Image 1 (tube, chains in turn brown, blue):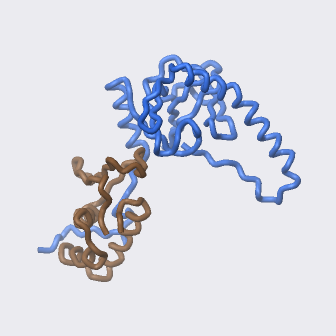
Image 2 (cartoon, helix red, strand yellow; image 1 turned 90 degrees about the vertical axis):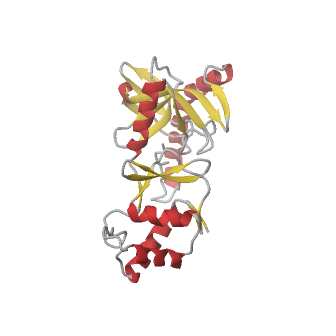
Image 3 (cartoon, helix red, strand yellow; image 1 turned 45 degrees about the horizontal axis):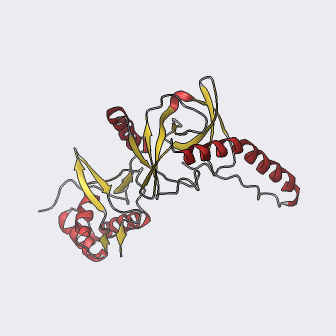
Length: 88
Length: 177
């Protein structure tokens, strides 16, 4: 799965902001932001990755056990799906 | 190298990794743009102004509120983090009544000073139409004149058929931006 084309992640001061340009389904009167870990996973998803790869990268980059990382990745992916930000 | 600054995500953290910032963050930018350029573009969300303004397909260009007249579409700050793009039905002093073209109730006794901007142009699927155009003025006039009877008739019909409806099925259309 991969982040849809029309979206960019930009750091504004210390906030990671998602900017939607070119996706007509994007609810534009909204500004979405990601935390540090969300931004980390987003960058991987920009090039495309599967769930297990995300878990692996999270475990190797951050000090978390696999179990927590899995729960976090699943929660993150479901929020991206809910906002229709990724293409499977 | 492990990153020491571990952020717990959904499992323990209060905030998830993805957050939608408060609407006010967005409209603060709109206000800024209005003050700076005298104009701002707002994308339409919700169905309350259909068929003229379609959810996510159309947009409007607003200007700072000068003289507001019945028939104008205004961006109204509800001061609860919600905004509405609805049509002014009548004005009484510094208060006014508005309704969405596709809504079945009147929003009465609203303070005029909470109007952020007035729609001067409509972007209908990429086509920019001035609200000063003859057709747009006529449309506004007809919709505004008909809004009160339209809503009253609907209410009367609702009241008449109520005894025939099962309890609990009385639904009022929710407020949409």
